[in-house]
Amino acid sequence: MAYILALDQGTTSSRAILLDRQGQIAGVAQHEFPQLFPAPGWVEHDPLDILTSQLSAAVEVLGKAGVGPGDVVALGITNQRETTIVWDRETGKPVCHGIVWQDRRTAPMCARLREEDVEDAVRQKTGLLLDPYFSATKIAWILDNVEGARRRAEQGRLAFGTVDSWLIWNLTNHQRHVTDRTNASRTLLYNIVEDCWDDELLRIFGIPRSMMPDVVWSSEIIGRVTAPLGPAGVEIAGIAGDQQSALFGQLCVAPGDAKCTYGTGCFLLQNIGDRFRLSEQRLVTTLACSPAKKLEYALEGSIFIGGAVVQWLRDNMRFFASAPDVEAIAASVPNSDGVVFVPAFTGLGAPYWDPHAAGLIIGIRRGTEIGHIARAAIESIAFQVADVLQAMDADTGIPCRELRVDGGAAANNLLMQFQADLLGIPVHRPAVLESTAQGAAYLAGLASGFWSSVDEIAQTRADAVFDPHSDSSGVDRSYARWRNAVDRAKGWNA
Ligand code: ADP
Image (cartoon, rainbow, N blue to C red):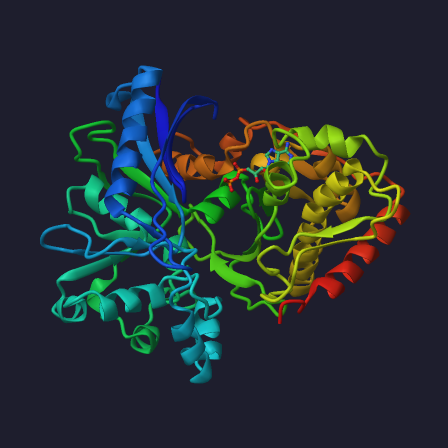
């Protein structure tokens, strides 16, 4: 038997997944690693924890499945995006912990740059916003705060990488310092129109060009793993940031194809083809994976609280013992009876971007029960996704015709049916909900000839389809009520 190995390096755990030629999962291993919170708003990872947890997961999945490295045709990597690691080229040692995408320590630098009026130039070149979320200000922070780092960087002695770069640098015994275009497009330093690290952006953020990795395509042969353990000798042939990997894993390869991942938060991405376009709805533009090795773009909108609203009902309200129980409780009532839940626990993301919005539950009456609130919570996930999809449709002028879904909360049938009713389009849920890992595996499998085409891969997949119900008047009323409730939630903490 022959397999593709996908390494899925996430924010809280490193996973390794084996896929066979039929696209079936032949093994999964998962290793969690520590989250470090050294100060309020700071989030760090030890790069060595990332590396060892990822290698351990790879070794374990091969061992459990009884597969030797000789049976693995190629390896694909997908990773938490934006997280920033700087290391010494000579020793290979990181100069400090990695700064995680969630870390807000560089908010003052972003505010200062905004005052200098550079945001528009940055947007035109990168498709992003000036926000601590992206890598550039995190690199600058390391150069300014780690003793001697700026001097060493200016002497060409330091390297920067996102997690994909760090893993590949180590897996290839320091031979390859690379990243792919999807990861590069999240740094605020890559010009996604001209397809290069941008000197003006490097100057704005004060980062020496010599630190930057070489940029490769998401689906190409990059080098062999030299580590003595696990996938020794296997060719690395795919790289993508997690959300773009999920977009590809859902085979959203044509303009207009869109996917939504329903995890802790929700991430909606739509392939917009080969023409760069800036959102007028406060979405970001980013590079998508392209096995054809040409620039392709996606619009992206992130929702902070998706499945997390269900966690909140479980852990804080103690309405039920496990997340999937929410479905039966929500189904115990025919509708939310006018209750609307806006889960703006940490403000609102796309398309509202209101850090001052507050969570609210409104429309509560004497007869309101747990079921109504649970149902309103489920509906809030779908309403937020509809808000982002409407913004995307307004940007592209092409209404989305179907939505492909994945992530833990996509297992909820009531949510998926409500989503289809609300959007008025079919919702497609694949039998295997591992789109992120599948994306990296497909990229590596295409580059290595394991699969011959996207069409061949498509034949290995089967979807459950949720078709919209024809009578939408009740749904329209409830969506209008949602918009009213959002208006009331906005600005509350200002
Ligand atoms: P992440 O990758 O962000 O950790 P997952 O894709 O594993 O997230 O999904 C976990 C999230 O999905 C949790 O927030 C959980 O509350 C929610 N969830 C899991 N199962 C269900 C379900 N059946 N219905 C609704 N939400 C669910």
